[in-house]
Image 1 (cartoon, rainbow, N blue to C red):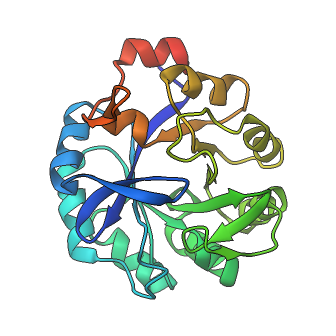
Image 2 (cartoon, helix red, strand yellow):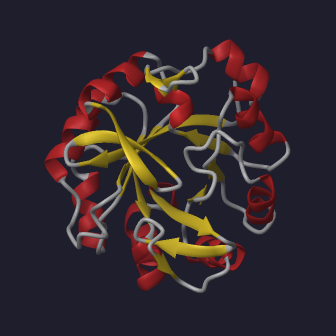
Length: 248
């Protein structure tokens, strides 16, 4: 049995799935329901679904869209985007989602992490930390917070977060490899699992995040939805044998 998970990270926008580079230049990938079905058929460890516009547009989660994906997803599903309260978290869980990821809300109202963990269990609460130029950013990396990512991660874990989804904004979508220094700094500071995200260009990069960065899981978008130098869309996922060899 592998200890480390490999997780496709899907970005939801206007009812479709998109892939970004450094949180910009979004390109259409496909239909979220069909994509979730394909990944389920490939027996992925988990899926992360992030609505990349919800918080910036000041709206809550699209429960109908989330429910449609959850119906096709037989792996644990984590959703993030537009969560404004513990009540929003409850609404998302109620449509079949196992984990909710908090990003901007965890910065604006960190007590929500504690409230959510007490009500739903720490295993159901993920805090997503986006990092740009050494600083925590929110709202699609458009708002600076002044927070140090290591200190923020330590605070979120202490407040009850069951996992940290750590994204290096400047690596996201580039295939340049994970920011291993960032990953190490956070994994060394918290006693909860850290999901490394942003920069995976090969399954060897996934292994590096686990072995060298100390990550408990690795998340990727481009690696699992594109193929070849021209980035043709192809939903893919490594075979279990490959994952056992690479991420252990």
